[in-house]
Length: 210
Image (cartoon, rainbow, N blue to C red):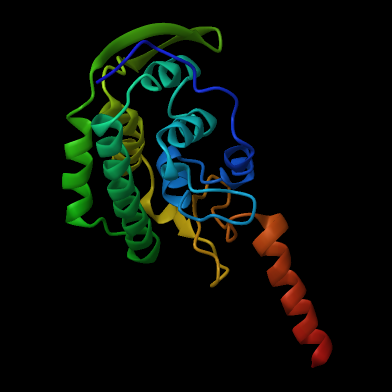
């Protein structure tokens, strides 16, 4: 049951350290990538507050909504975290299928629809770049609604983006995915300064030995 809205507090260092990993260019990809935990980071799904901090940092939730959801405790948050793990596993599987052969597992659709049923809110008119824009604002009335923005991000990708631009990092030892927004569509690495430079160094070493 929810209690009085509280605050999620300052972002733990182990969650803040994940910010450089938010390079997927789509919220659902960043969420799928969150199972990867390099040194000094923790899995954001280890706790309810950790998940809320990650959601704010990755842009699927604003701070006010997170503070409201921080007031939920007990079985409802435990269920939401369990569903979050299931959703992340499904999205990782979806990313793998799409990156490999541009296909979407049927199971992913049913999982997304099960999450989208918790969506509740309304449209809001705003201004953007000198004009106007319309956006959906969720009510955030239950713990399960913490997952709906991730499901909507996935649905928007499936409906509007090019499946062929969802890629796995070309480093065979890297488990991360990204959506290629480059003009020429030839991005290969999750991060050039990490996997890209390692590949260049390995190629240079190989050529020097030859």
